[in-house]
Length: 92
Image (cartoon, rainbow, N blue to C red):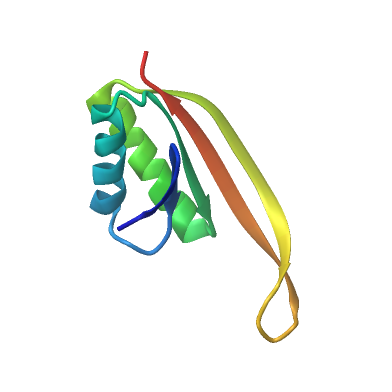
């Protein structure tokens, strides 16, 4: 199951349909505002796909997109920079 923090769906390595199911569950609970969050270019591409499907099929609107980077230290102690994206969707 996708990791969920309130109305935030964190996209990672699972198939796209898992994240869509999570979004549908949130919509059924009348939570019409959600954030799709991803790190890394492959996961960001999935997050964009999920957002576009929700926009087309569920009538949601993309209200805001944040793209940035963060610096972290990996398990070997090497400092790395990763890209991340957050997409705010709302159903009005």
